[in-house]
Image 1 (cartoon, rainbow, N blue to C red):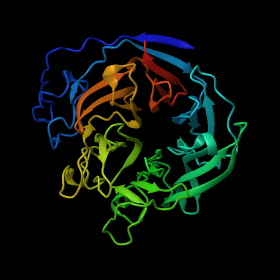
Image 2: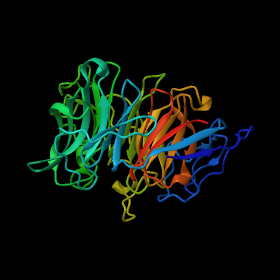
Image 3: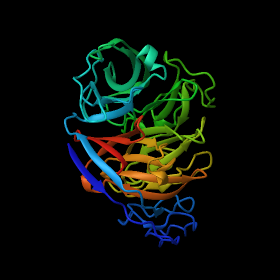
Amino acid sequence: MKRSKIFFGIVVATLLLHACSENDEPERDPVSGTGNSVETNPPNANYSPAFAGQTRIGSVQTTTPISVTTLSTSLSSPWGITSLPDGRLLITEKGGTMRIATTTGEISNAITGIPAVNSAGQGGLLGVRADPNFSSNRMLYWVFSEAVDGGNVTVVAKGRLADNEASIEAPEVIYRALPAHSSTSHYGGRIVFDPTGNLLISTGERSNIATRPLAQDASTGLGKIIRINTNGQPAAGNPSFTQTDALPELYSMGHRNPQGIAFHPVTGDLWQSEHGPRGGDEINLVQPGQNYGWPTITYGIEYSGQPINGGLTQQDGLEQPEYYWDPVVSPSGITFYTGNRVPEWQNNLFIGALSGQHIVRLVIENNRITGEERLLTGENQRFRDITQGMDGALYAITDAGRLYRIDQE
């Protein structure tokens, strides 16, 4: 087990406005951050944000001494992590296995009985959650990519964790995000329970030029946030969409590849992270029934360097991200910090960054991002997911198979 200590610098006492970036970003509100932006590289696109602080917000720094512990390096491409009621951690591995980890780093044998996944490309066994009544019913819910006639789909399944924790009993697929497509990219794949006991699932638009427009098609399950009950049926109280043949399970639409969803611990609002193309990674405050714009509007460009839809970044009826990155950090799993061991982290949003190879900390005030920090930058890891444990510490997993514990020193 590797242990390292990171001591973050003292926060600058006087609030400073940092200089505008090369995209002529408007001057910032003086409450935004305490230092220059953490992003110093030039943007890919010369787009102007819709409002001050929508990108390259001022930086903040953690003052509490923090301990970062590598609990394990033996996981195989872990993708999702969540807490069990007894404080242990349930982790999915991309290839199709689940494992249970203790908070001291002991890793269980692979849990069997999980339906076969298609782990090609960006697919595999993805997000996971335990039932709110897990202590009595032992039910688990997870997302995976499945090969079916016509291609691959994002799938939601459920099953009971056996008493001996060696297998999943009576696994059952409860939802498929259709249509299927041959692409092995952009599955989305996160899953959370809402306060009413229903499930919210993020789905991607499957990446290809041919499937992109389906994020704007309410008759499909691609590029959406889906809200269903634990039997896979549309949840009561879902919003209505005006498009013809709109699916009753839709909660929001117009997403590209959303790999993080979490509820704010105070407001109850749903927040979401989303991969953009070349630039244009987003953090969205998701409101039911709203359209988040992809691919009609975006702050990113094609990987070739060409603009998308003529470089349109705003349009009436389409929601703006609360925050975006250009260049990208590739935001994946997210969680809010509700502990008290690191006081300045209270209610902050933490995001695993893949290409950025760090953990993002965002300060949110009145539903606006007011500060950004980059943590664990020296670990050189692609951070896939992060959660808060029952003990109040943060636990993060990386594509290279590491499990980290992040807490007050």
